[in-house]
Image 1 (cartoon, helix red, strand yellow):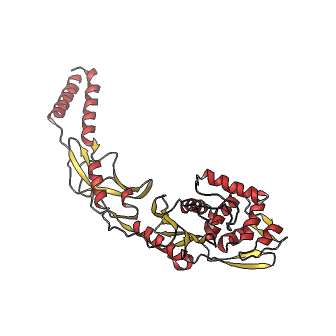
Image 2 (image 1 turned 30 degrees about the horizontal axis):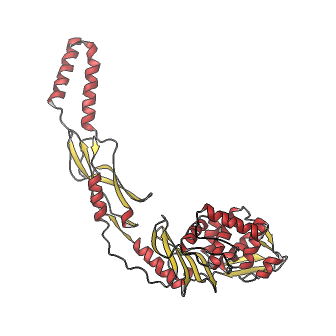
Image 3 (image 1 turned 90 degrees about the vertical axis):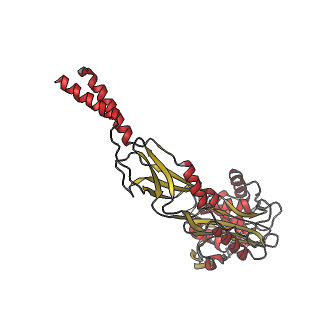
Length: 392
């Protein structure tokens, strides 16, 4: 054997040892699916008892947890003001002062009792709009943003088209009964989601009351949403009532970092119906065991050292729909042999849709020894040693 062949032989030996020490594949799929399905055993829920003509409750991942006539086109009263508030904030007028017009002043209703010629801040008008359902504030904001109610309503309908709200049409910025003005429970849930994306609006709708400064001093505005006082985790959003629409309520609540939005239209008791919807939604997403501690989640194959099974190091709990749960095993990039019981061999990732619920270490329960060189490797080492002796 010539000296020129030594580098090639050394390379072969290095590759052989690297293959022996490194993972070749992870056979996880079948084990993971079986484990995920086993964790999903839950009792069947009865549908909520509600009297609303149209309603629904959705999760923060967009899953519809319950719906009744969610696409029905119905008068929606002051829930309209959610869109008015969203467009006002996105017009970049926060910090502006608004002079009340004669048209806005005669609209009346909603706590501030605006008078023509008065000057109010946009923030004060938004509080009145969303908490006490001020119709005059809706008109004042619309005129300030777009110059006229008609131009502002055109913007409302344009935004509805952008959001693909196929069952919504606006005629006014306030929602008083008007021919051709309507929305649906499903569409209102989307608008509610848009509102909650705006920090200033999210803060306003979560207030039980707000003190605002006006031309005649401080005015306290009470929120008409009684859920904020009576429902655990309630964070908003908007009440509504007209003779044509009946009682309407768009609600939202957060528990254990999960948010639900409920919409109720034409209800004898919108608060009771909303509580029932939210209760049902949280029950369906109730915090439960999604993965047991010690559950087998995959196998790491270390050829020729053998294979080792991976187990979750702790229990994973969370609020999630059973049929959205996925459990995956991510092997470590490399391993130092030997492996002892409780050595970490990778990670377990529990997801619901695109949301990662938890990531926990995966460990082995058994030992795997460092592989001894095979006769071929031993022979190669002998040849290398002999080659070095010849070279010397």
